[in-house]
Length: 577
Image 1: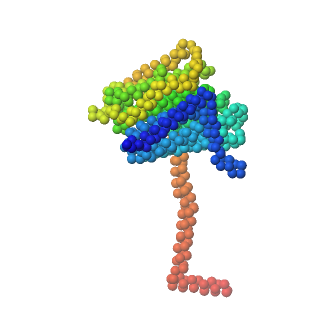
Image 2: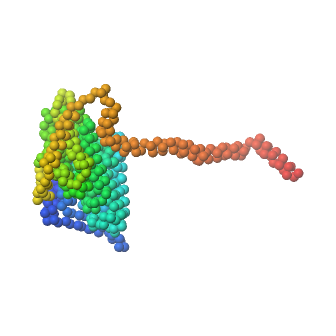
Image 3: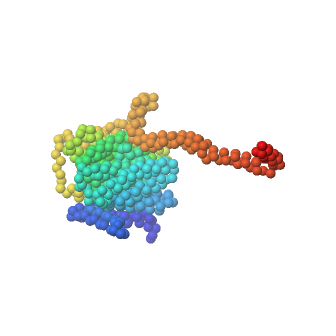
């Protein structure tokens, strides 16, 4: 009777019930235009009160319900994926702590309580990234933790500057005078914090590195928790950012992140890293539309993206699980014949990512591109938006070509099958939401249809770049250029584009190698060199020599006594004369 009551199943039931309650409450709050602000005074001593504040409105409730939906299905999926792990209970507890930290961040209108969730995410993400304990995981975990510490420091500085306003609940001060230096500095710090958490340039290197974590964690982190925390924070602060120069900087940085991630994914062969770079590209899209002032659209895309990205990772996890932990797409091929259900889920998630009509991604992505065409944008930003959309199609079709079609690249005695029933159940829940989630959210959040009137060519632009990107991706995936034909310029350009513009190297060895070399030279010349010679070791050597001489004089030697006696007699005679 109790054989199914594992920690995964119980967590799944609890989270899914909570998700349904929060979603229905969120829809009710949205239609009633209703929000609840709760202040809980924890302690008050001598007029100093420590207050915990919570904000429940449609935005926080619906986002929490989506986080809980994805985490419940991910935990259920982990029951089979992590079944060989003897520490599965510890893993599930870490995931639940991760989700709880995200809850704190979502419902906090106070910068100090936001820091509680923000730092909780950073700490638990480090524990999850180093879960498979090897050197690569440790390096990835340290890069993740230290990159996010920059954002934590920015948030702490923003808290310090909030003292100028007389309180830490930012929600009261969003409509402050935009010309004041305090508003500019706080906005700048909040944007910096958001950029580190959501891995915008120059902090992008940690996001693909975090793929060292188990795949269920990747599905959770890269869809609705860690990487979306920065976007969510900026959505909350968006009224403060409107009209400031920092939003123009954010638009440029986010556009370049979107472009860089799309180009990098076309040269990558690691299945999980391709999907991670795809996440980075979509985060750039959210940040770009947010910088233009359309925070509701960024929120809409945040929710729809969470659904199909979690599904993509779960499908990738099922493939990796069956491939006996091989992640190289060159080793895959003809998976459609061996794993038809998983491949169907992967294809639907891929099409949703590309904005295929009437799937989840279409409703948000198409709307974002049409609003971009309608906005007062320069040609460079416009090009980045649409070219990056084409690149999305490009790497998606390349992935399909390598993994699902063609000849099988594995041995004839392959272990590939679709018999992971628990994993398939977990994926089917997200598959259902990927198909209907976009239209459902569109009807709930925008009940009145808006007419976007554009010239025919601009209206068709999203479709044109998608088809061109898909065709180009198919053609690129067939390239096989021999080593002898590669010129140095071609090789360097491919290396530059495929390594995320050398960002992983610059973020790790490039940043730390010079200080380490100079520190090594310093320690050898100073600490273990002159400082040692003139300092502790030199003093020790001098005193030990003097002590040895002194000891020699004081030893019971008749020769020494006679010599000293003679010397004393001579001195006495000399002094008398």
